Length: 276
Ligand SMILES: O=C[C@H](O)[C@@H](O)CC(=O)C(=O)O
Ligand SMILES: [Zn+2]
Image (cartoon, rainbow, N blue to C red; front, top):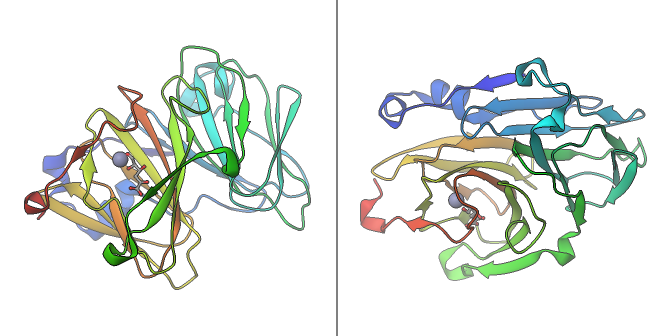
């Protein structure tokens, strides 16, 4: 288990490129036949990737959790980025096509992650937060997710935000999760930037070609930094940090949040003259 501690913004000001990447970038989530997980102390979010091949992969509690099973005191949202997936939740099978999402709640004893066809493996991204209430496992296909059309080609940020796990969608205790897809020719997400000190956020950038990169913007508004991110890499966004990005092409990303409130629209917009 890769463990990331929380960093104070006064310290992060002095981080060089290597330190920024070590603390906030998640480089290797997807490896055939394995589950990789990163545990961040920001709201104790677990960020994971699983690529099942011939055998299903069981999602078990790593030592770090010191619980009997993964979902003893947790909930999670899964999104499939690969070939057809089957997630078995305490014996109940859920089929996920690419970009479908599944919520799995507290109390679930056994979660098996499988590919329908090993030649076309599923690629499951997941985020898990602490949970104190049991809620049923529930799937949402991307065409059932609430689409929010934002931005414009003139400002290079035309995109659609699909909300899966949120107040008006799949129910959870504190986790919110969705996918944002940029239109060709648009490269900016979340500009003007925003803050929500109440909640941390995790991004997973995907649908980038091998040579494409996203310059992920982070830091306090008056003290910004960037991390260069490649395809299928994740970024941990502390609650005090802006989270925005500009790509060398269009791209998509999965965002997930955990923390104090459960209100997607609660964002403090950063005025452009504040950004430095
Ligand atoms: O708090 C919300 C998150 O930052 C994302 O939903 C933002 C986003 O997908 C976008 O602007 O493209
Ligand atoms: Zn945000």
